[in-house]
Length: 373
Image (cartoon, rainbow, N blue to C red; front, side, top):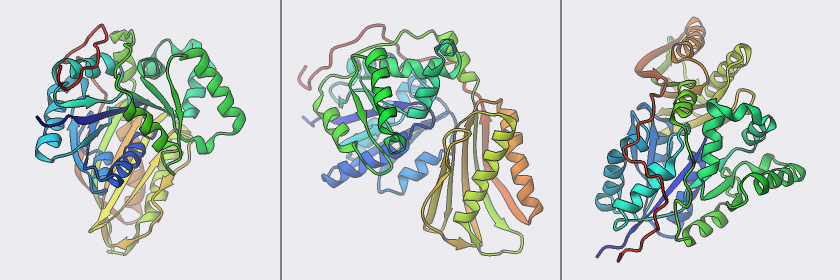
C-alpha cells in the first residue's frame, strides 16, 4: 500500500504573506529531497501566486472560480493528481485569504473521506502583526466585516504563526504574546519571517511532528461571513505592455512606479487594500511586486531587466465595489497611455465573492486516523 502524502494547509487573511511562506516551506522540503506540489486558490483565474510558485520548480495546481470549501471535489481532484500523477510527497495548499471555517469544511471532511490518501497536518493560520494590532485596537468593530472573518480564522487555527517579525520591536512582540495568551491560550504560537526564513524550519518541524489536525471548529455565522466577503472587490487582469515607440523598458522601475501610483490613488480615496500583487514576465525573465495595506511598504523583486514588451499580471483585493476598483485601475492605465504605453487586455475578471456554500460542513471534530484505520 502506498504511503500517505503529507497535506499542509496554510490559511490567513489577505496580505499575511502566505505565498512567501509556501515558497519558503517548499524550499525546505525540496532540500530534504522531497517532491513538492502546491495548490493555489482564488475566486477568479489569472492568479499571481500561481505564476510566482510555478517558476520555483514546483508542481502547481490552481483552483479558480470558487474557494476550496465550495469546490471540495475540485480541491481533491487537484490533490490526487499531485499525489498520483505528479508523484508529490508533500502538498501545500493556500486557501483564499478571505475564507474561514476551514476546519469544518476542509479538515474534517478530509479526515472522514480521504484519510487513506493524505496525512493531514494541523491547520496553520498566518498572522500579519500590523493587522492583528489594528483588529484588536477596537474590539467593538469585530462584530462584522472583514474583521469578523479575520477573527474566525484565528479561532479555528491549530497553529498561529506570526509573520514579519523583522518589523516588530521587542516590546511589540511582548504585547502581542500577551494578547495571544489572553485571547487564544490553547493555540501554540510561532514567530517567523517568511521573507528571510527566520523561524520557518522550527514551525515546520513542530507541524510535521504533530499527528492531530483540525482540533477545533469555530462558530461561524454565515450571514455575517457572506457580508464580510461581499465588501471585498476582486480584480485579476493580464496585460501585454509595451511602449508605442518600442523602447526597451526597465521593468523593475516600471513595476515600482505602477504600484506606487495605484497606492497613491487608494490613499487619496481612503480605500482599504487587502493586497496588491504584480508579476511581470518577458521571455525567461520575471519579477514580482506586492503591497499589503493601503499605507504599507511596496516590495519588488531585486532584479532589473529590459525588453520591448512584457506580460503583466495584476491582482488587487480591496474594500471597494468591483466596478469602482476597475475604474481605479483604468485611471492608472489611462495615465500610462498618455505617456505612450500600450496596454492590451489579455484577460480580465472583477467581482465580489458570492455567498459561501460549502460542499461539506461538520459541526464536530473528528479524530485524526492512521493509514490502517
